[in-house]
Image 1: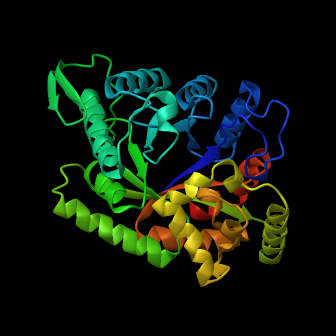
Image 2: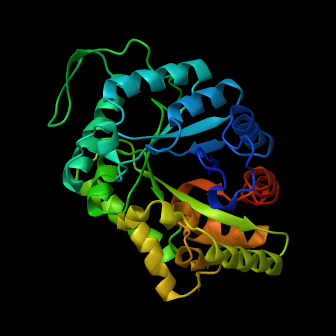
Length: 351
């Protein structure tokens, strides 16, 4: 199993109740977070993207330069990037870093008109993403390639500086997320790893089964699709302490300004709505999946939390692993404190 953390990349401090304010997104602080992942057992970290955030690829490049084993999972968007430009940039960083680049392709709505992207409707957006992933992979692995798609075309193209190749890794892996049918068809055809948010076990099992069926129906010509989980993990020494802290944090969120105030349009995403709907089934699902954060403003991977002692959360994650999940992207705040706490207490139980 692979375990990554999450490093915020935000203009405004206080992401998910993080307590760092001064220099929260300055290079010294971000570098400290990256080095902490190295020191506490993490393979690297996801770095999120968005038009209103600092450029993710620039941040990832800087963090790679000041670390030795840190693997950045770099979130990027088709439309913001063109395939050839991105393939060249990622291959360059992959060579410079000794093969540490991972890529998270993001296709949800994100203020595209503000940076001149005419994305079209959902079907067009995901059709373009499929072409983007196929063409980027081709730049990385082929010479003199010819590509004639609806959204992209390339003739006689060869990328001289290709990514580092290792056994089982012909190029940087392409992670992908999304719960709509269009997104799932894109993942089944072109992704290397499909990331899920913190849904209950039965929901993840159904998603995995559906994606495997789609892979067969779409005649997938790549290695089998792998699966990952992106979720908040609130871990304390004891079960009682963890739940007391979780409930206190939800109460604090209910009193303050929540994530939806900043961008209420995020409710439109199918995967996000699936998480919000879970609260109707109860505050706690499975053994320790806490749905209450979504009712008071928790968004994305912070909509549901796995809460408990290290043994509780390790048991929950092993149950996801039993379904076929092999990639885990975990997080909690304050980031510095929880990188160490969760890394030291949880990861040894899973390895």
